[in-house]
Length: 339
Image (tube, rainbow, N blue to C red; front, side, top):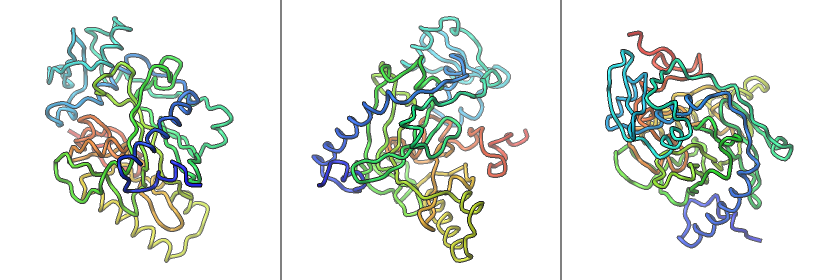
């Protein structure tokens, strides 16, 4: 019998169908969130600094140059490496909450060098452990059945304390977005078009749940994603390591990757984490995935809502992406331009 979840993969739905499906997704999220638990080795200072990295400044280039931040009153201030003030900005409600709970962080200079490496772990109950597909960085991927559809669910954490005992399900809210809320992106114009990437060689997010602090009335700061996406068979790294793809298969996979990356470039998304594990496979059809390290040109809110680009000026300017996988990253990601 047709269930509400049967609508999940549809690119086009009418308004009533979308709301029925969204209600069903929201019911699932409500039951799913309490099952997520992790530990973080980072501090409240790290947390505050990370929130500044998610900030949208008037000039996106500001994200490249700031090295220190400080909060005074209701404002945040960022400074360059010589501690020369670059910009003052209004603190978000989430930042204000951190400062209320940790008053010693007020008027305190915080620098990038003080941010601790994350060595925390996910504490998954057996129910979820059995569904674990991959774990890396601050994200995990599980398989999950929605009606008759077997999907992959990717949980990505942007706030270090998300899903920890300090910041659990009862302290957050969410907003669910469906692929059927949007059209197909065809260009990189800077506009408010309600479109998202849809291409054979791009992983398809059928739904994305944006997570916020429960007190974030304006939804200024997205703290994590739960993305419901198509489940793939393997990734290119596993394929090359464990299998022996024929020349024909290799050509098709390579052509698919190139086609997917070209399409992303066409719609204004530069992907900067091109490691082999981020090219998933359904048969011999390649799917570009993992949009944690991208620079996006159009500023379209719809891309962010469906989990294809992150919020913050850092993700609007490639030179601000101070991270990457050695061997697959560009110079500016791992060490700047040498200046």
